[in-house]
Length: 318
Image (cartoon, rainbow, N blue to C red; front, top):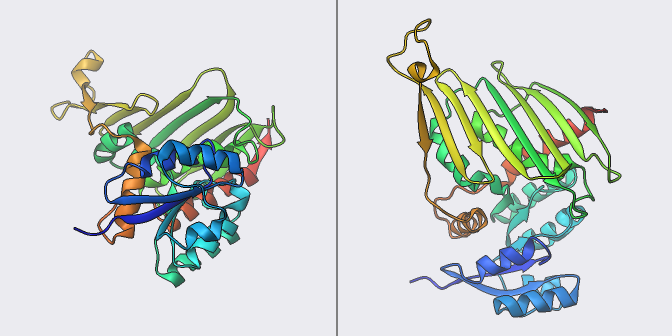
């Protein structure tokens, strides 16, 4: 049996503390320690998960082979490069970086060191997404709505980098497309100095169109994806993890049928239960061990960031 993989967490605030919580109980892993610029936070979370609070980033990096990084976006490149240049594998919370130049530097550093760089695009591990993915076939139109109540957390960047980037990554994953040919958008800064609400219209090679709305000024949480394709219509509720497929009946002939039930059959799509963050961390650990994995690579994270920055650049005020 191989020795436990020594890992650490840098940044144990609202998100990072959950990384630490899972890593502390993940099979084949030893959580060596945690670090946060706020010493009190680091000590509190360390006590919760049974790992010491480290005195500095380099102290932690000297004792681990992999780290999960959940610091503010503006620090992603700085902290990520410190780890990668020491040969430490990195799982970076999304977005990969604040700029494409920083993302390219991280991807290059990982390649140079020969270590894993993953990005925390957690919706890839959502139960509804995992259930629906095998049924997605040449989608023609994708509609996404992601609405969250206002919270000061995350307002250091626009809603595109804070929330919509999840759905831009899903768009690329669901379509398997390496590029987007046309990007348009409208949005508004309402409660922060950055865009708080954005609707983007994107067109992909072959004519596939997506309409993606993200808002962090809603009153209720909504995370919904609708996928229209020749074989039917899929609905994914990312909040509940449920997915359904109104699939065109194989026996149906175009122009026949007097009710929807005669045309389509409703199929409940299933996937195993599983905490999305725990699954994400498990895939990261597998990658670090050189095993087969389904983690989101740095290259994929760079593609999602590129698309998010394109959306932000074309948004015109509402």
